[in-house]
Length: 198
Ligand code: ATP
Image (cartoon, rainbow, N blue to C red; front, side):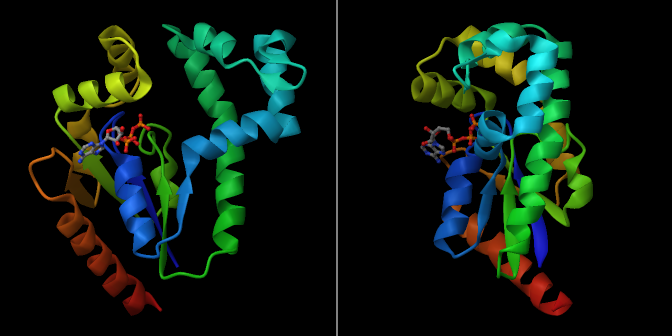
């Protein structure tokens, strides 16, 4: 079974594209969602986070997201520390999840794949892109946040061009080019590859 990464910058439309693959019957692992679950339920990870950032980031066992957001806001080092702790926990869940899948290939959707080096555990990577201006508008309206907040999040990720260069497939989600035919083409190529391997 092939393990395929699905990445792209904030607001590029990774989740939207992942949902199209799901409609085609492809199992999708949503890394960012899993990261949230791990931070709420993985006792080892919770202990590590409390040890570094203080017990106050959990109240009555519940992660205080706004406290954590304040800690990592404008602090690249803290963000890196959190990523380094959360990443192995998510990776462990992904491997467990993969063992229970029965498919030609599975997708791992994640905002940071190349940034975290997790492409090493994947067979290939799909990158979704969209013009920065469109991404900005999408995130501002989806999350009801200001332009500066989106810019801050964008600055914590690699530029799209760098990801596109490293990816094996590129899906353009610019609201001009049709999305579904692009997904169908990638799906068909991946099925052919996985059948060959099988
Ligand atoms: P994030 O990294 O923030 O999780 P993402 O890359 O997963 O973002 P989505 O959540 O899929 O992006 O898309 C961001 C917003 O843009 C969503 O509200 C989604 O509905 C919208 N969107 C995505 N693609 C399109 C499109 N082709 N046409 C219209 N709206 C779109």
